[in-house]
View 1: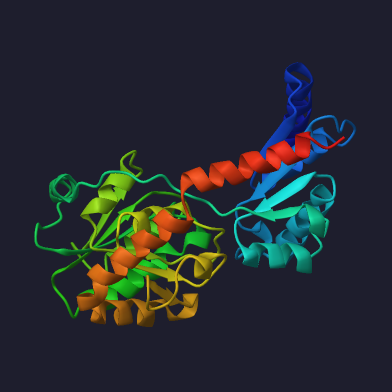
View 2 (view 1 turned 180 degrees about the vertical axis):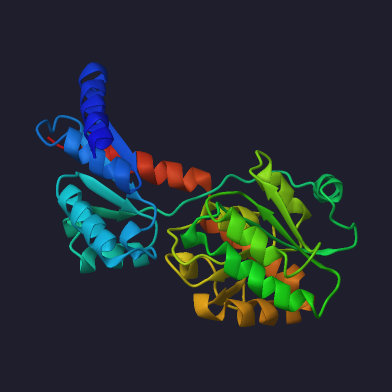
Length: 307
């Protein structure tokens, strides 16, 4: 709490020095601290982007209640709240986290890029992945909300039936020990690559992408995987069902049915190329970085033109 109080004072001092027209905060703590810093000075407009509501994470009830009340306190002190999906907006309205007329849905977007599967597969080969393996990949921080141990467990069951399967995990975090422990149930089949600056490029070497999260906003990792033309399975949380249409441009699974969902998608390997093509089309048409930038700047213009 003391460090947060100091941070709010530093933000207030920085705002006084820079005199910005808009302060744009991302995620819960930054949004709450920015609201506290501006509570006695509303000259800059305050915009907040919620990347999923933290009180929906698997947390103790007291912690969830605290975060919900802080989100509500801060939400009524903002000029605009950006959410990434219609589902997130529905949550905000249901819990009265902001005035309804200042909630705007602006989904995330990613830039298109050139893909190089040959180069990516060579990187995976160096990491110990056989050249002919069927690679299931995931990129995520190892936080409880990302549910990575459950993905490893589901994979381990499937790996018993297919000796060609490999699981690539790009990322790290507080649940690494649990991930490593679970990985030992499939010896030599799970490859932990840690944090990588080339995570998006590595995706080109995957055959399939899996996202097992318990809580999400509109995840960049999934957008990037779909943009790369990968067939994807993701859990039906947050705004994911607004990206993936089940059985058409990907597969959806409830978190408790992750194993069955992954098995179902693997049984349809003959459909992977078509599903991947549909996934890339979805991103290129609806979830581009340029669209996200244009909608955000239009909102900024709207706010700064108000008197």
